Length: 302
Image (cartoon, rainbow, N blue to C red; front, side):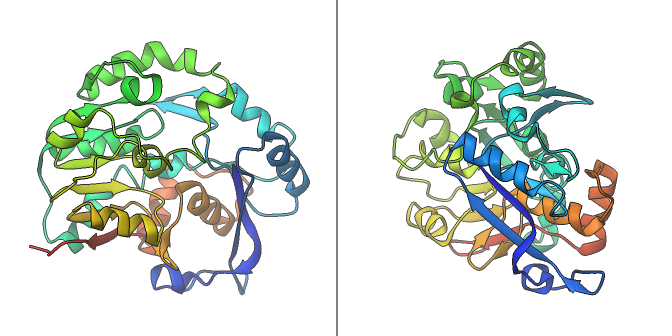
């Protein structure tokens, strides 16, 4: 878990996106502090910073799961910020349903065309349904692995309609899952290749990097990976395994891409409305500020 806010070391917007982002004549500042899953430390930080910064971002866990127009609260996660009364709190889900939902449209100018894939794998879509929907639009077949990866059950969901039917039943139950099943911020560091059939047949793999990292097979030759937060070391790992194209849904800064919660907190503070932003407002900022995914060819470009 971590929080981000307009506080700490200044980060000039032109370093991130090639434009200046200044609010009230002052350069923006973003600070990220990890608590490595320490729930009480995270609660204290959120409480202490309430009213002192312009936005707070929750990382490593989601506060709500969204399905269509309905949001399902994750009660354990919400206890982290139950004492926050004044500062807007975001968890990145707004950008997951705007920036990530549009990832292939926004990346098309740099790619030179709208890509098309035969088989796609989304290891976990529970918190990234917008990305899964975007993947489904550019893929002939899509497998969603929530049951396999998150619950260890040998059930592959095929297609968005099937996933939606299952989600309507499961999401109310997930609301009561304990923190240990919800927090993913420190996971994915050990190699434990599983579900190899689905990884091997996919020419597109999309989802949260911390989750997929643990299960990746050693050979990813020629594949495209669409993900979020990655470091230089992650990039070299993917290059070493043969990944052809890496698309990160948020831009890169100092060798790593931002998490959606960090970027959404930054945009929330920049908008200065004193509340979280709607999808329409986020899309307006994406277009107005020219936010684009990062496209990196790790093997030879076509």
